[in-house]
Image (cartoon, rainbow, N blue to C red; front, side, top):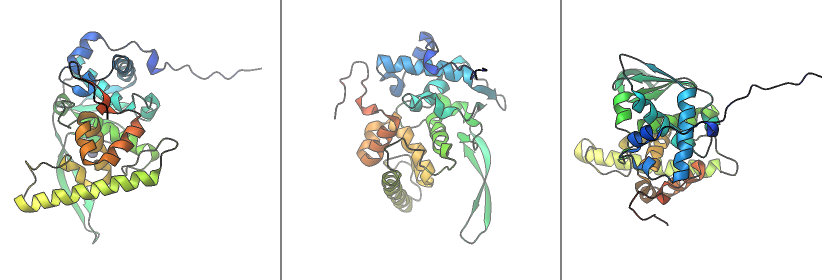
Length: 271
Ligand SMILES: [Zn+2]
């Protein structure tokens, strides 16, 4: 009798961890990586090795990434799936690297059905079920504790679109309530939108105003989710203080609580 043999696929945990040198280079100054426990850091480094072998990195418009850039992308990209597993990234393969922010033609349709076109400068973008585009300059500025992280932002969109709909609700794990998620996220999104609008009305712009989250989150529910993920990993205390329900749901979804991590020389935060 013929036995059906499925192709053997090496699991991410079986990859050797990323080298000590690359880890030290990339983690330097990045609290979201430095604060991982030794065991989590090792698992992340193995995931990153898998990511580097499994993904195709392509340069566009003369971008010149080095090993440290690719390792930064791999480590930051794998942080959200540290406990979810590599299966969450199985449906796309390619990362396109631009040297800098890039212009993308945007199209919106207003309530009267009029199509408006404009050019927007982006630091990253995902194409539906396809490549992720990242600006190398923004990758180099990501993850340094100010809540800005283009890699995690675009990976959040990739998780979000896995159910075929980019709407700020990723496919939730068993036992999680979609209704609870939508209620908590839309309350927070509407609050941020109101605050951003008020701040803009008073000053003509919101620059310099301390909003609970990066103002870009007020663009749409899917951008709110992606920016919330940046803050969850980068400035967890700030997100918890502003929108505790959103923080708790992200913590449940990612199966981790970044506030619990410790930085070398600092006591652990337990709450
Ligand atoms: Zn986005």
